[in-house]
Amino acid sequence: MIELRHLRYFLEVARHEHVSRAADALHVTQSTLSHQITQLEALLGTQLFDRIGRGIQLTDAGRTFSDYARRALEEVDEGQFALDGLRDLVRGRVRIGAIHTYNTTLLPAVIAEFAQTYPGIHISVEDLPAPDIAAQVGSGALHLGLSFATPGRADVEVEPLFSERLMLVVRDDHPLARRKSVSARMLAGLRLTVQTERFLSRRIINAQLGTWIADNIWLEMSSIDAMLETIRLQRQTAGILFERTIDKDSGLRQIEIVQPGVTRTAAIIWRSGRARSRAAAEIAAAVRRHCKAAGLSMKRAARR
Image (cartoon, rainbow, N blue to C red; front, top):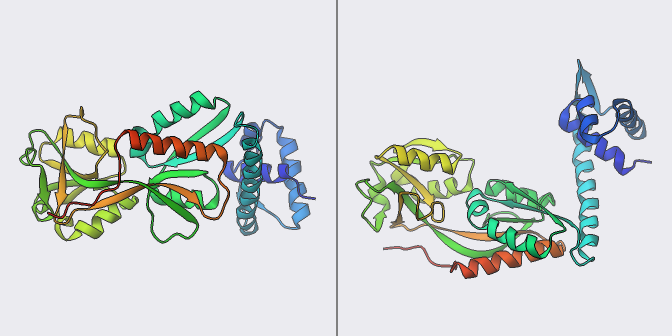
């Protein structure tokens, strides 16, 4: 009979592609681990790994089985977590995914409040792009996400929190720094930096402003912090980012982009059709409270 330890051992070996390293991570001997993998292969009647030199790789059968093994362990962990939630949140684990902006500006205060009330709950936060958050919430790898509305997914539910406008970010001495707004047409000819197309925000920007900016993008970066530092160092460089990306003491200015105005909707991302753990529900409640306290709400993009 296949047991949970077989699955955990198998997935750890698959992750490391090395038996001795996996054994160290699992705190078991290499011989014990090798025996368990051999036993699992015998139970399944197929070879899961190809031995290549000192390392190993999943066979086609191993890759197929890994998806099922991962989901099985996630379901067991989810069940354990649900039972922990019945014990007045004295222990357990909550896994959160957050886009970088919300991870740095919103989550710290939320986690501080939650930890003060429920010190026995282990919190794990992953800083991820929005599509990855939606995928991992949908699969059950994350209990909830703090991201923004991601269209076209039936496996997640979106709880809107507040809307954010798209901004042009410049130095104080940039030629446009004194303006309160700029039209999309005015972006043509600027020296622009944007996030890479790995990020959904960039895809929103392309869809709404591509006509005006496509020929003016000279720098694409995955790190918002690196983008902001580049803008600080280069007077003529302007970034296109959503508001809440920079703070008031950054030395940079945010200028609203209008005609057209572009917004995105910040949201809590839930897994569709699944019970929500008490810990995740308490985290979500703290997020709502902090959004309300900060005056964050839904609003329409400017169309001036």
